Length: 318
Length: 276
Image 1 (spheres, rainbow over the protein chains, first blue to last red):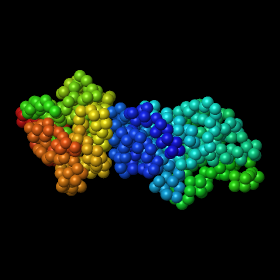
Image 2: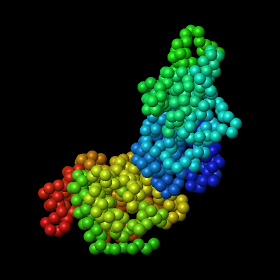
Image 3: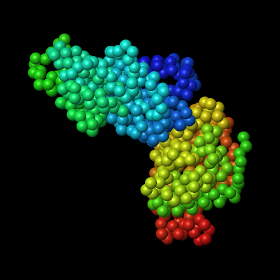
Image 4: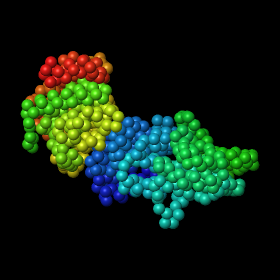
């Protein structure tokens, strides 16, 4: 997703001379092409995320479209007050880019895992929050951000779901994408972990359980219509996110549906439950450890539907 | 570069009006930080009395000089000087800090002449550096001024911004530190010593001058000769007295938070108006 982002930005930069890319000294080997071609539109501000965010606000107030780029929590939590006061309060045209959403940086450790970012960033007034699931969404979201005015956050996963774009499909910010139709259960996922939901849907389909799979690429504003339809048209909703369940996608769906007065048959939030990811392992391994992989999704759905788990096939057995 | 300088009588009167307005504003609304406002009243008077190229008739003019009050708790002082310069009616000042007013305790934008909202310390210099970098990018001749407190030099982000500004040679950026040596609840010397302060800024590759922050002539001379060094950002360390202008508020940490009311208000006003 990182490459899809920077590739798109590089293509757009010459058409948007006001566009600036700021990095907190990260992106080794990734930003070279952009830097070489558009040196006036690039700034490595050093390992100083607070200053990067304040600078971005100042530059944006002077008419620039500013992207701040770093990994994990560095462009968000480290400088949260600058984002809140300097960027959001002024509605400054700053786009915050997190490379390595969720547990993308697996064995690097919890310091580099971004697992509370969606909850925190979506609480900020005027902040748009995007979390694409595949390379197409990442590129389209980036393209949208270049023209969008105001504060935004985009979380880029290292993993990516397979692209399932329909011919002629257009990226609609704020609208949930239905990537697989189904009427038994809804799997609502955000980010690359949508791949696990799709895999689970394949397994469940073989058992006669047909899942609707939603890519919630925009966490804020949340598409209440599509969620309400899923709640009433399918048996229940399972949210899947590589993120804390508190305040993330699951929390946002619960708030939205409760307020809309629409209640799904059942609702399960799959994500990190009041824990840090302290185990060493790849992103895939950690998804298994924290019960966020396709296997866990299948088990969760079958349990909720009252299907005997012993009869169920697991992904591993496929 | 020519700078229209009205010196020094006009700015002294302006400084006195800033102080009396701020005294009334904090008293009526129950706002605090009067000591920190008095500390920088002379700096604000000199800046708005002739240094800053700003026009109340065109507050958003892209060619204007930018001013960031990083010590946002001195907001009443900024509101006072803006009203005095005609950015908005003086009557508005007395709504400060009260229900429904748009003059909040810490500076908030949305008012003519206010470029940036502040209040959390250590933010202003980064924003100002961003504005200065943007001006450099398009070779715009306007300048960016940022007024800091000494207390906010405790913040690491201030020094992140200082590194950046020097690295990029932001000679269009001037930081003025209101160096009154008293921070929120105790003297700098007891909290986190900043000395050798000039050396620190110089080590960060800023061009530094020290002066008496209540000496209008010195302030005007220094601020008329920017940048101090052609390729460097400029830092003016203004040695000031917290609570300056009212004898019982001077150098008293109490008046960072205390609200001037009753007999204290009357005595302070009498001193400022020279009728004590």
